Each structure stands twice: as structure tokens, then as C-alpha cells.
Image (cartoon, rainbow, N blue to C red; front, side):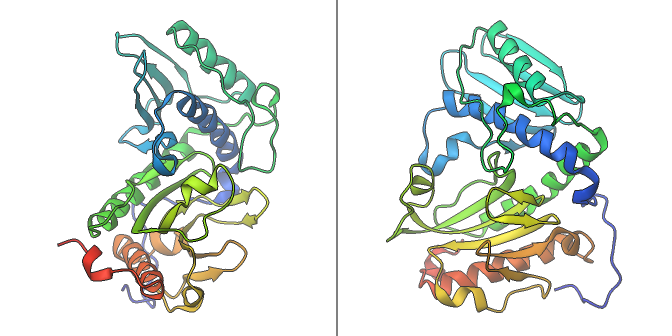
Length: 308
């Protein structure tokens, strides 16, 4: 663990993410990713735990990957050139610039570009997991796009994704890839015990997501989260479902990690990680100590699930 008495260190690969500085762009981009994500939901073959709707971090931004269907459509948010790119198997390609525009305008452009590619798709045009659920075609108040902020967020995603991959590689059992959930706008990686959840949520979305025991870690820029409250900064999180009672009071590292009873998760401020002398080791320590705290409390087969 980094010595907490050392001065904060700035790391180029771990940029500052001050919510107040980029929240208007974040709120707009969140809804843009949901529009593309809903296209993905409509076209991608179903996978367990909703993995078919997640997007992946790339060196250029976020991508749906290839959606196996008639056209083999792939859509990418290119945060280097600042374009949304849609491509199909026959060489068809359409794109447009990512720049300040309303959600309504973005929605119309996406549908128009897909139509030009011969992709006929219908989506439910209402955002999810946000307080303001103005339908996409009527949303003219979210219209911000600051390139520097988006580039900083992308750099943070790349740094976090690398650590999440390392964490995933230490586990022998079933685990998700690090993937981006556009509903909550978070990057997550999840480990599974192999046992079914004895009391899964009784709704059509959360039921399949938590059909089995999980311990999840993720990165979220903060802000308003549906009806559960607001977090004023970017955070890393850790939770277990079902949550074993001793988990919330377990000692975890680093000391700046705290359990939030409203969200039912441990939170670690992104700022505490990025300014640590060794951000990657600090984040891995948080992930490993929270995993072990939950896994031991829930009687997971820890030794059998550890990578050889």
C-alpha cells in the first residue's frame, strides 16, 4: 500500500475528473451512449446477465463490437477523432461529428445514418437509470460536449480498464470482461461463485443480472443515480449480491474506502487513487480486499477460484 503520508502525485494516465467541471457534458454523453446501447439491445443476440448490451473500452473510445445479424453492424464512439462511426459487413460506413448538439438531434442523426446503411431498428426512446427521463426526441436541454472533458474521461477508462483486466486475470472461475454499462454509465467487472442466488430480484431486468452469486467492482463518474441519491465525485465501488452481513463492517484497503449504506456498496474516491504514489496498486488493493471480505463471509471456495 502507498504510504498515506506521501504527497499527492499527478499521473498523466490518471487525469483529474471533477464532476462539477464536466457534468453537463457527462449528462449529454450518457444519453448518447444509451441511444446507441438501445440499438445494441435491439440487435444483439441475448447473453446471460445482459452482457450482450454492454460496450467495451478501446484505444479510441467505446464500441458495441459486431452485432451479429443481417448487417453485422458495429458502432463506435471515437473519442480521438470525436465521431460516432457505424459500419457494416459489406463495407458500408456512416459517421458524424461528436460536437455540441441536443440529445434530440443526436437521436435523429443516429436513426438517419442507420437507415442509410439499411439497418431498420426501433428502440424505446426513453433514458433509463436517470432522474430526468425526457424522451430522446424531445430532449433539447442536454446539448453539451466538451472535447477535453471527454478525452480525459476516456484516458481514465483506459487506465481503469487495464487494472480491471489484471484483477480479472487473478480469478479462475467465471468472470465478466471489464465492460461499460450505458444504463448507469459505469465500467464494471464481476466475479461469480458458481452458485445460484437463493433470492434473486423479482423483476425482468435485475433478475437475470443477479441470478447467481456475484462480487462486483466498478468505476462510476458520480452524479445522480435514479432514485438512490447523488454522489458528488467519481468513485470506485465494490458490492456483493447477496450481501453477507459481515461484509459492510469488514476492514478493507485503502483507508479512504468507506461503506455507503444507501447504495449498499464500498466506495473509494477516484481522486484518492489517481493521486496515490501507485494508482494501480492502490486500486488493486481495494478490489482484492473487498473481494476477500465478501468471499470469505459468503463461504466462496476462494482457493479453488484463484488463478493458478
